[in-house]
Amino acid sequence: MTDVPPIRISLADPAGEYRLLKDDLDAAVGRVMASGRYILGPEVEAFEKETAEYLGVAHACGVSSGTDAIQAALLALGIGPGDEVVTGAFSFFATAGAILRVGATPVFVDIEKSGFNADPAAVRDAVGERTRAVLLVHLFGQPVDVEAIGDLDVPVIEDAAQAFGAELGERKVGGLGSMGCFSFFPAKPLGCAGDGGLVSTDDSELAAILGSVRKHGAVGKNLHARPGGNFRLDPLQAAVLRVKLQRIDGWIATRRRYAELLRQRLAPLEAEGQTTLPFERPGTTCTWAQFVIRTQRRDDLRTFLGGRGIASEVYYPMPMPMQEVMGTLRSKEGAFPEAERAAGEVLAIPVHPLLAPSDVEEVAQAVLDFHEDRGRGEA
Ligand SMILES: Cc1ncc(COP(=O)(O)O)c(C=O)c1O
Image (cartoon, rainbow, N blue to C red; front, top):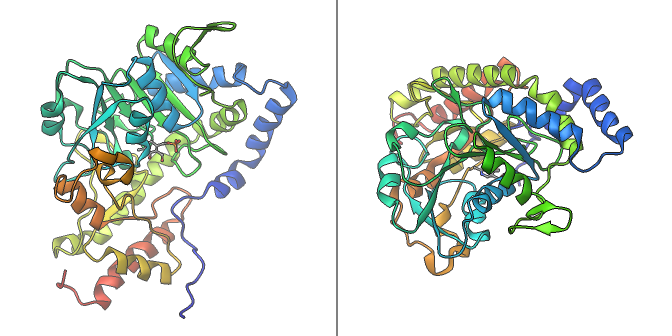
């Protein structure tokens, strides 16, 4: 058995973020501990206010995870059994899982030929009589082309779990539809120290409903007006997030610089048809939650990178409609050709802001060396 070296260049570094911000994070966590306010309260309210300002929306509702953010958004619209929600076929399964959990039916559409987001024309075509919402995922931090989708007669929910801070023109994602759903999973560009999420909206009525949904549908003490759950953001997590929110623009800028570096260094491989590189759609600001290249030899590349102590990951190996949980709705091979092709080719390589530029150089060189070793030109 050959020894695989330990990972030196990771895909995310939450412990590194802690080391960097230790004094501020310890003080923030200590403040909450000393306050005795461990459910909602001023820390969550302050985080909501600061985040709403950052996103350029009127309201933000802190919730327990990105998954629960989507579920809360669906519940806030009263979506349930018999209703359809249109969404792209390629995402982390939480996107479809939230639709299933409220008892609604996901209607999947294929992704764009270039890129990973739902194909705008397919989204428009899929909206039918039973559609109650469209759930658009800004995958890997690249905003969906909502302008190409155009106006729809149903609410648009953004799954912005991977896209905090991403922009379409001057507008941040989370403010493009009726509600935006964010995840603060520790490995995300804005990550907390556990689970956390948020729903953004400009609609005051929806904001009030979301506030109720996250507290069992409560509208007063022991008065429950609608189905909901315990979807509250923890104040300890809010305190951590408030510290990191101050860093997010700098971190995004570094991700963007590293993504550009990777694109430049790997450009020859793309020119030779060896890989397809991710790109930023003009008029958008991509936040590069992941830098996902495509190659038909991704499993070998993954092993090669691992051999050099470089992490990589397959996001995602199976389109959502093909998952077993879909039961009778499970799609057969060939139903979503672009999503299936992506699932067989994608590989995320390190791009996070705690890396040194020399780490990113090393990642690029390793990808180049892999192709050199195996002979250029044989895709
Ligand atoms: C696109 C997408 N949607 C939803 C989620 C769910 O977020 P969470 O893990 O915070 O529940 C994630 C998290 O990985 C995600 O990447």
